[in-house]
Length: 113
Length: 112
Image 1 (cartoon, one colour):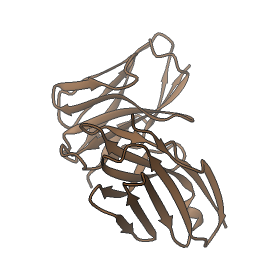
Image 2 (image 1 turned 90 degrees about the horizontal axis):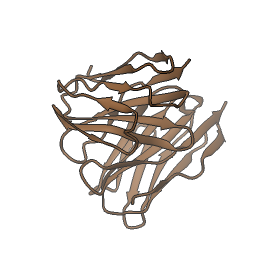
Image 3 (image 1 turned 180 degrees about the vertical axis):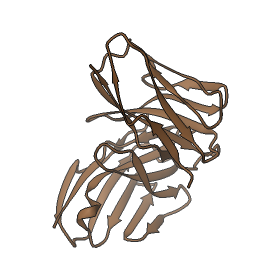
Image 4 (image 1 turned 135 degrees about the vertical axis):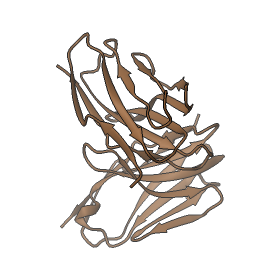
């Protein structure tokens, strides 16, 4: 079945450490997205990519970096500059055409220890 | 700037009741509206996608309607079940290439 796989489900990060969250899709979608879900604030866009080797900053890109070397993969690196103690990250994809609707992964919960 | 509001933030109903969840948006020039379900600690599961040219979509016990002129969408759940307990979010795509704005959701509890 087609879908989006995020890994790991839980991730622990020491202060000063960078970590990378994985997002893989087999839906043949061109566009991929990273969101952070904050309690009471909903989903906030971190980065998005419309095509391989291209990506754009979202509303809260500071402290994060991404790459898009393959159509299927859009990893997110959380750098030591990101100070929140616990965050929930969601990856999504969408067909290239406008109006295609989103498909989401199951999420990664990141905790600073 | 598009704003998406979902009221109420939380709702508790007895099993078997029919219910309506509301979503309102400020910019009516939308491409589509999508309803999602989210269980605690999980990702978002797409329930229904309504294109701007459509008035409603149905899937099983779920029916979503869209009124662009009034900036409103409703998600109707028939004969609610405890398994329907979750947070329901709506998302509106408008204002440029895949610019999507999410509501903060309605947390539904269906009591057996």
